Image (cartoon, rainbow, N blue to C red; front, side):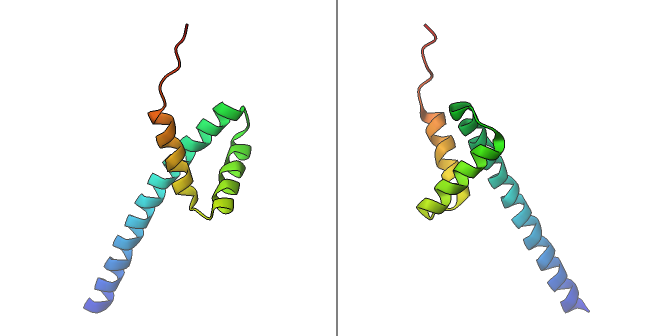
Length: 82
């Protein structure tokens, strides 16, 4: 019984960590979708499809593609409103 409870506890902790990681990745992906939508004037579905295609074509995880796009956008200088 003690061993079963320890195993259940371990599984629960692992699941909670996985869910936290998934939520963090989702936030980055949503930010990247917003960037694509603004740059290309497309829908959320079209932006996600584009990010997914880039991910597949480059054999990189979607979250890595999204993180790179967000980082690039954050590092870009703001346009001069003149």
